[in-house]
Image (cartoon, rainbow, N blue to C red; front, side, top):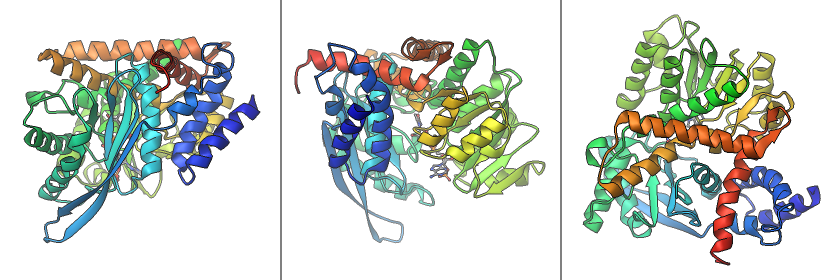
Length: 446
Ligand code: NDP
């Protein structure tokens, strides 16, 4: 078996050299899905995974725009249309200086499994740019978004490819992107998700990823007769996913001890309550400032420059910032300090060494493609509401989100149970794979 997996990976690597994040994501899937494929007559010999690792289409384009000093700036834009076997391409746009082909391909690859797990009809895609919104004025961000969409619009559409937000792309950016699409196409359609509620957005979409991460953690704990109430929780990041993961933990009776950004983390031993969280939301979403200001406002808290929060003892860890932010050393610390459960809010935040340690110590570990699927699930619900030209209530969307997260948990248990333990990585990968593979087989060699 090891030989089949390593031959497969060597073949993929030969074509994708210098794409470490993409190969990391493919390796994790190959190691769990290939042993399953070889036991299934219908899949074996069909090269389905080899087809899945090759994007159906990659678009790369120039984004030229003029900054506030009237200097011409040039960025690179991308859209990876990875797989459309079960629906139109769907996945976020990331604006961050680190964006490159490897990062977007890993995200697009993860996305096809995640979207499949939601049970909604969405294929996988991802896109973005190496543009850094940090420190830019609103008008600079608008001009960039307009230039970006002036090329992207010809590749997307409500039945073709429906982008959404991700790191650096929130409601402000989605607004500018949508405005430019509408102007170019002269059509008001649900071409993006994460829209404002008054112009086609869904209630609960901003909250969905963070809430979903916590709903998934709750399911994993419940499966072991544990609950979230009274548990200490360490969260990384302080953006969209981290903020609403914190909000849901507080609502469910847990204690949030940390939040972070790329400059370091804040630790509040008294817990970040609703009032403190609303300060953070204003700091990050309105003032667009750094997390360290928290300790000026709440002097009992401490700021740890240049560090990640995994050294803080906790029962539950929610990595909600970025890929590979939790390494083997951090995992060892979490385990030593008694962490029971890790539910990934970010995409691929745990390194392979960290995942191995969680598995060896039977820590409940949910990979992002399962635990952060709530965001894209509610994006799918936003698409459904746009098609119906109707809006569901907050309670209705939240109820659907909870049902979807519970169903993803069930699928992971179905395909990942190993004795009294659940291997959620294996469960998520195989459950996601089966639906796409069946559709690809039915649609012939395309
Ligand atoms: P935001 O841009 O709202 O927030 C990102 C947060 O992560 C910020 O606090 C940011 O800090 C921090 N961060 C980003 N890059 C780094 C880095 N290299 N090192 C340390 N910290 C970093 O993004 P989201 O909250 O939307 O996304 C967070 C993660 O969740 C990403 O992995 C994303 O792919 C994933 N995700 C998001 C979904 C969504 O619906 N938004 C859906 C599913 C997954 P700073 O400001 O200093 O950069």
